[in-house]
Figure 1 (cartoon, rainbow, N blue to C red):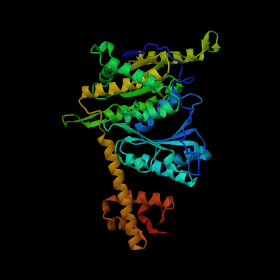
Figure 2: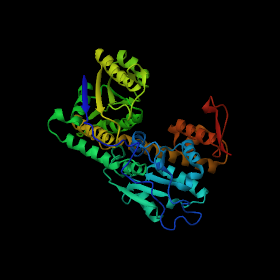
Figure 3: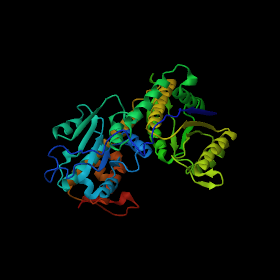
Figure 4: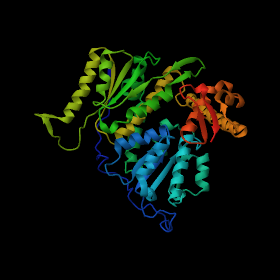
Length: 458
């Protein structure tokens, strides 16, 4: 199966060279340049964007695809609760923290990862004697925990997002548009492209409805049961993160145990991929000759670059090679009865990226209706969050027992006293983490034999 969806070219200047938005104007409010705790310059130079999941992946994808080579504000992402990753971002900024705007993105305001990132970044501002509130912007649900904090502390700005908009479908809301606009990306063109795709999705004639065609192609290839994985290969460096973005959008939306009638169905489509042609060297051998448990999605960009290309061989450019790799890969797959879909866009610009985002969001919704699942909730993710909270509660109980006993205990003894006799392995891993990070827990014995270890407070 080889299917194609095409967008007609649109006369627009390339986003890496120009923008309709003026984001290099003064950002300081009257009087905020005075005093040690306020911004010391009349404009910001950088952004820290703190989010998780779709609140990070969407802005990251759009930044990679559309941010100018020399953006008015350079963006840095904190998208995990990894202390080393947070330290690296802050170290890269160094003294520029004094001219760095902070976007905290969380619909509920209670998601641990962005909350942790916010607390750590706030501490970094305090360490440099900077008033965090004068640098902080909240993008969150109205009256959420984050919204209340931002309001109480008089943050620089607050942007609302609707409660029914999930992170993975939020790129065309304030979640994605605020960081994009601050980088000089033409968000109006993004919205225009998304609107154009929305209009196309409402066309009842399937042959002229790209989102419906895409959903039906997925259904056909996987027999409506997700029997085949989706391998995404965008043939453009600027679309590098598209496969990661689609991985969350598709797998979180469609990976469901129950359908709308409460029947156990175990639905979903596994998504992986990277960049063509670089990463096809990692995949194509198996895709063509290995287990036929996939369908490929090739993203074709017709324009090589603005301006004339150098010939690397007589009459042949680097772009010709890239086109040849895409078409050759598609043909090689077809010859061996491997399914593929090719989505073609004229160039990577704000309008086509907006259209791509809308195309896949709508295709996910239509596919979900075909398999009778709810694409817009995520009980598995919520279960993971609850399980993490249980582990943290267990850690608290274990430490309380150690403080009370004030003597060395075996791990099994500690588990019994904590009321968690069946959680010995989890307790061991908690203690090992605390011990490794010098958090006051001392493990003594042979680490190759965890049952021999004794634990105490140092």
